Image 1 (tube, one colour):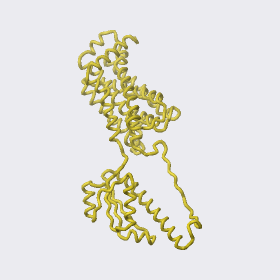
Image 2 (cartoon, helix red, strand yellow; image 1 turned 120 degrees about the horizontal axis):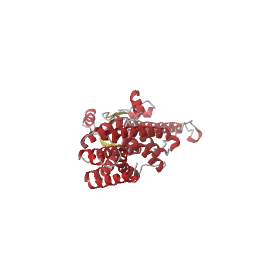
Image 3 (cartoon, one colour; image 1 turned 120 degrees about the vertical axis):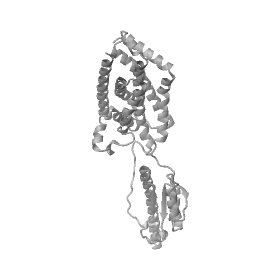
Image 4 (cartoon, helix red, strand yellow; image 1 turned 135 degrees about the horizontal axis):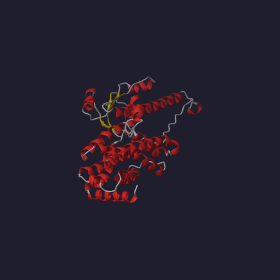
Length: 383
């Protein structure tokens, strides 16, 4: 290979890209827009959900339970229906996400130590939100019940004249700790995955469009009558976009820290090294798409035809372990899956090569295999 010829192709490609406004926009604006949209929208956390309070008891105890719900950051009281029909109408029109119903005799049952029920109705059209709200409501009710039980027991002990200091009731404490994402923010889980998807999409689209553009405007034949070899042409055409993709990758990491305050526990150089391995796969696929497309429109359609299944099977939004077993085996052929695991491991756990070496080996294997196959096909098409 001749370094001077490769350098000239790179310089030509950079000039051509910088002259074309559409390509300049494609390199910078879409990745940032995708990052911001996914960062703000891809959030499964439930906060300040609207709930209605249907109180058939209307006692100090029921009002105390309502105060527990109103004091929670997850619930906002928006309606006080007076009947079941009115409460159902609120739910039918999606004015509330949940309805808390306190039965008549609630306070009396508590005073007598009898079991009582508080009904929690949740809108299940969004199953994830319904599951989370049910868990939050259950925790609030259990916490209130435990507090009432302690209060009643203390009153009985004091009434017997025993005094609190003379009685030592056995107790079991439960300490819960969450590692790597203590606040359980779904944004901390999603944004590292967004890095991988943006890097893949930008590389695929830019690489395939750049090569196809030469064929579409008729300059590919002019290039081939020069002394440039096919491998030099391929390297010269893809190298600028690899650099641009890594620049976008670094920019998104900075924005993740500054805008969303995503924790970064790992080694930045290790993450960039993994990104380079991942680029072997995406550049190879971009080259392959350029060999099967004759126009830039075909290249864009082919890019999305590959990217959408890779995105869905990457574990970005849906955990791989929840997929059917045959599909889980299919995800093993997806390089995006391995790079997302690396990004999340580096960001949240601070993992390095000693933990993530299987994913690195998979990226290296797929990268070299795909790139060699695509380069061979590219060479044959030019010949």
